[in-house]
Image (cartoon, rainbow, N blue to C red):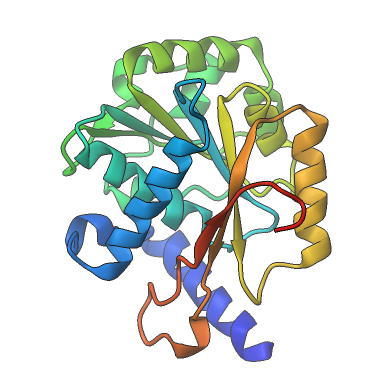
Length: 247
């Protein structure tokens, strides 16, 4: 367990310093990139009656791979020709601006605080059809900003402008931010790392999301083969499961 936590901390530090890797862009023919496409397809089929326009990605605790998965799945959607926007709503530990090498001077926090405009907060990326909205400067009151009527209005504006809005949210058990966002999104996906996530913590995260009537699309089991991995991505994707309690 000590070795797993040490590796987890290393991955977390790399993400916070350099952003997460985009294997779906750098190695699109790799088996791992194909697995991210499988995740995308399963999410698409998880909601056949309603078109998903906004999806929240969260986890039960920090450093569980939600940003890696949400960013890479976003790339696979953009590859389909969909106009996709990634919103970094983790205004406590943002990584999106580092991943896509864009400025974080103006972002989500500015828009919600009324100190920026939409054009200045959205950046095109090297990936065709994919844009990003960084978190912006870290505010003292992220939960209040995300729970404001401005956030609801902004989400409506963004879903009208893009085919899909993917929201990278903070861990649900740590702060209330993910609950607030999930309550207004079309769907929520919970990222669960094998051998790292605490079972009780995952159950609690699910209960918190259900408490705000979030539409939980399912859970992604990642880092399933971490012990056998020699690279940054090894075992990041292990499977996708529906929300049936028996699974």
